Amino acid sequence: MKKAVIFLPLLASAFLVNPAMAKDHPGKEYIEKNGYQGPSTCEECHPDTAKKFLDTVHWKHASKVANVENIDPKQEYGMKNRIYTFCNGNDIVNNLKETPPNEKGKTKLTGCNTCHPGDPGDQLHGVGSSGPAAESSIDCLVCHSSDYDYSKRKPMKNEKGQVIMGQDRSVKAALAVGKPSVKNCMTCHETAGGGAYIKRGFVFTKENDVHAAKGMVCVDCHKTKDHKIPTGFDPNNWASDGSRLACADCHGNKPHKDAYINNHTARIACQTCHIPRTGGAFSKDFTTWTKMADGFYEPTTLKKEANETTPAYAWFNGTVANTPHFIGPKGSRKDKKSKIYPFKIYQAKAFYNKVNGQLLSMDFAQPMATGNTLAGVASAAKTLGIKKYEPVAGWQTIYFASSHLVTKTKAFSCENCHAPNGVLNFKALGYTDKEVIKLTNPSIFFTDFVKKQKEKEEW
Image (cartoon, rainbow, N blue to C red):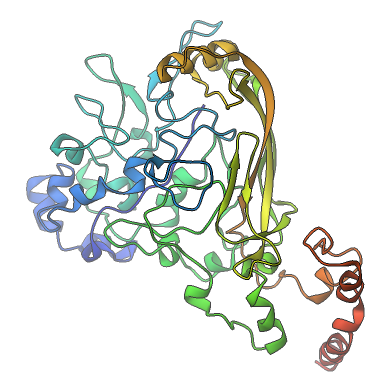
């Protein structure tokens, strides 16, 4: 099973030009004369960049986490070592490897870090590696080239029989460096979790997101500094480079012309009204895998397309409740730091350890080849040094934040929330029966809507 992670751009600001102008970047003559040798070529103009990159989440797949309960604040957490039921394995137990033969005698090269921006070369320089050899293995062009040959970016075996990731280090790709495009980012983000739109369920196109319609690309909002990229708060996305991203960073706290609507921003997140739908997987079963046409198996998955899933709404103050069976937002109406946010509720079945109640990880190689999920649990337990365990099936619920598929024309208006059958369950959000009656009455918006209706008719 493929699990993808996002990349950070590697080249410094001198290369951040429009892809159409990439052929004119300052290093053109040098590359044409000397060829492209990886990060050492980039560092002719951008010294020490590779070393700094090794300290980013995109390389380490982990960071210290201060906003999640029941974890050690001194340790680093992320896809390198977390065990949760969207990716029931992590980089430690699912490093690049070859599966056992399936019933057709075929094997597959796979691993969680197939999107890790490193080229192992003669040795494996994967998640968390450091030193000069790791620096030289970084794949700068996968994020920065508009002419990257992604067919070369795949698991393969080297002369020693090790499973490594290939890279496109061609002069052609190196001469097309520039500002990362949507394709550069979405090559990994789009397939996170095992396939197209599985994990996040969003499509960043002009038809699906107002920012894309304006011609914006990912890094226009996720602006990097020293290859550290800001991210939003998501109950399921723990690792970060320390900087956070919010709608107000660009739009301010009063983004509307209507003062009444602006009053909502104190307790209602922008996403609640402007991201009315999401998509992707909403349930998986890691205890029973489904046989595919090629004879290999994948976790049994239920999913919807982008814009098909109705979010759930909850108070969120940026801190995360974390137990073996639940990962989700913390917050309440009484907490002034909390706002109402939209979430995709995801529920999955996996194996827990009856001995201590903790979720067990899974090595995907065995079940991918044979469908034997318990063999995958046993392999992971051996890798992690777990000697006492008794697998029992159980369910975990995870809340995924909705952060993309932003719309202006289809955003919620008053009647979407302030109606008896509105999208917000005010009772569940902590409002009294008396308040609910008031909040779900047309008197709140009736006069304003009559005025707008007349304006439409006159137009």
